[in-house]
Image (tube, rainbow, N blue to C red; front, side, top):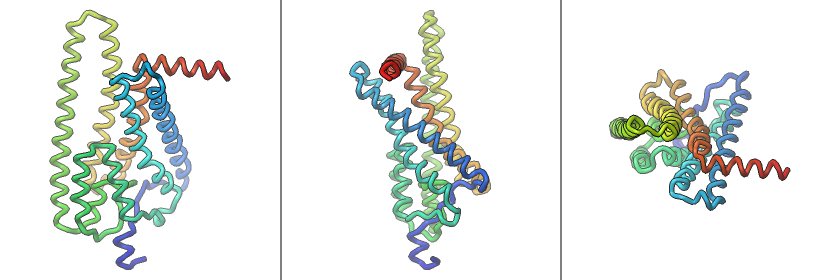
Length: 270
């Protein structure tokens, strides 16, 4: 197993570091989270797809969001659940599988930027065989390399991340500023209440994604905080997909009414 072919073709995935006593507890928790994410997001897609009254641009946008959440979660959690039940020394993955997983992980985040990043990473040779993460992403891939070219990836990644987060925060600030201005000048209490309710839940999900996303991206540069980085990376891929159906689905009046009608019809039929 120490030959050159193995070291360059087969990778050892570090995974989550859990004690033997907590293995099944963590496995059960993540499995339940995965089932909830899949059921809630698939139900939202089916509801929007089958109800003609929901065939509007806004609802199709809501349909695209759970599809993205299903992809992002499925790329991560089944493999993670499998690795939790394995010994740390048995969590192997081929380099090709790792690249494919990293590609779909970053499709979930921001496609164009990370396709380029992964392209820059794959061109590098790798002299290491350990993925220091629960799953493969671009940062984990370029840590396999010992070439000087890895500096290019680091610089490009940091600059783009700062620009991306800055633009995102600025956009949110401007958008919410305009919404707040409308609420202040408007005397419609019902409209203001709806705006505050919708925006507060959206802002909560956005802040979770922003904090967890920026945490695991920047902590990749600091090995001392590897466990905190792992926790943040897992949160980024399970918390928003779990909250989005509740925030964007049940908070939307038309979707909520259709869901209640469907639920009552099925309950009456049973």
